Amino acid sequence: MKNIPLNERIIIALDVQKAEQAREIVKKCESHVTFYKVGLQLFMSSWFETVDWIVDRGHKVMLDLKFFDIPETVKLAVEQVNNRGVTFATIHGNDPIIQAAVAARGDMKLLAVTVLTSFGEEDMRAMGMTQSVEELVFYRAKRALELGCDGVVSSGLEVEKMRGDLGEKLFIVTPGIRPGANVSDSGDDQKRIVTAGMAIRNGANHVVVGRPITKADDPVKVIEVMQQDIIHSTQQL
Ligand code: C5P
Image 1 (tube, rainbow, N blue to C red):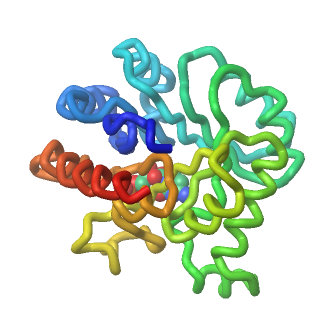
Image 2 (image 1 turned 90 degrees about the vertical axis):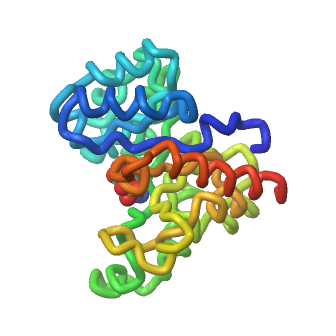
Image 3 (image 1 turned 45 degrees about the horizontal axis):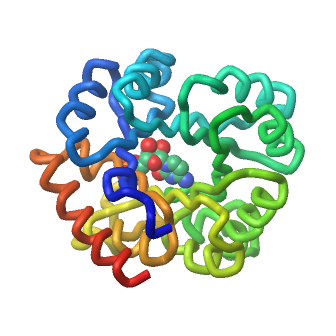
């Protein structure tokens, strides 16, 4: 946990329309951050082009396509991602889906999405679910680990219990990161939010940050402030 380099702690979510915009962000931030997330929006426009470009530059990639389909289809999709230098890929789903993904996994690490960080307690009630978000996240994380996943994607609010009960082996990647001043209300679709420092202190290995960095006037300044917060938190581990 403590040995993760500072420039890999933040994974910048490249949620932009075009490959050129993504490249611009990477070039601007790569002196400080060497881990980038390619998600649905960018993948829809540039397919593997941006992924390969980032990997060729010597940086790490989290491919966040959250595969969710019948087990055979998920298996075939995971095989398409193998051997491209991707570090993390995300999947979603029940036991047979996770098992199929794990069996097909090659050189990358598979992260299971537990509960989206945009999903709150009131959304659970609206779906008729009686568990708390934390209970559901914990159940899914435990199951994913038992089935051979390398880690999970989870909000920083549930990390402490997972890290405590499931051990150090599990990779925990936390989106829903907002700077200190915005941490009680993101002002957007994210609901279960924490600061970068809180997530790391609670036991996350990495944080995923999109808009607070990519929409900032000075992205590097935002990164530097977050990294200071992370340094402070890792000293407390
Ligand atoms: O802009 P923001 O910092 O909210 O971006 C968060 C990123 O993390 C988005 O790309 C989103 O797709 C992703 N993500 C998330 N919650 C999850 C899994 C992924 O917000 N549970």
